[in-house]
Length: 267
Image (cartoon, rainbow, N blue to C red):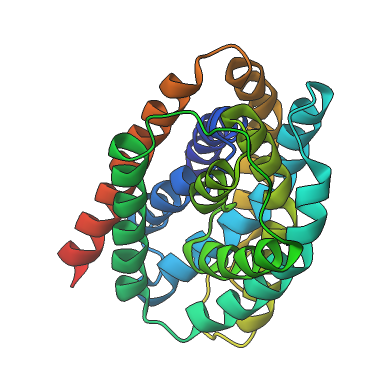
């Protein structure tokens, strides 16, 4: 049953990744916390293991999602190039910071962050952005660094931060989603490497892990999410932009609430 749960989580995360440009991490992390808890993994490593595994799966999901968005002209590659190095640097730093935070507190931090972003998307982003000049490359690099750091700590592809930033910067919603999907790749690569590295000396990890990355969970979720991300990407280019924002906010509301309540309950 463990593998079945991994596949279900991956399928839902894949649709979310393609639809919202979020990499699926906001779904994968809460679900993996629940799965690992149900299977009696050591509680002190559950959150870090969920985040590291989530980031590893987002590598695969992002490739599938960005390919589908790119075919529809939904990615602004010049923006991606300005942000990519910052995303990598920030993700590596974020993995180091997360390694120093106690697991239950990390759950609470992630939950609060998701809830705040949900409120922003639901109540403060109801208008399509107007075309305007993009901010300077230095601002895009700086935003990438901050987004990469936060995303690595949260175990997400960064869409919950990248989409609002790109929308504010003047990109239409559909280009924001597509470019965000591409930005998830450097975040996930650097973040997964960081969590695998920082977790390699942890003594009480379960079998079948490389640092804070669960290998069978990574494989099952990746296969399911890779296939389903294309479905989500197709829907993203059909549904109205306002509907995307509202659905994205509701998704974050559910995921953030689950993590926050779980963390408080454990404490």
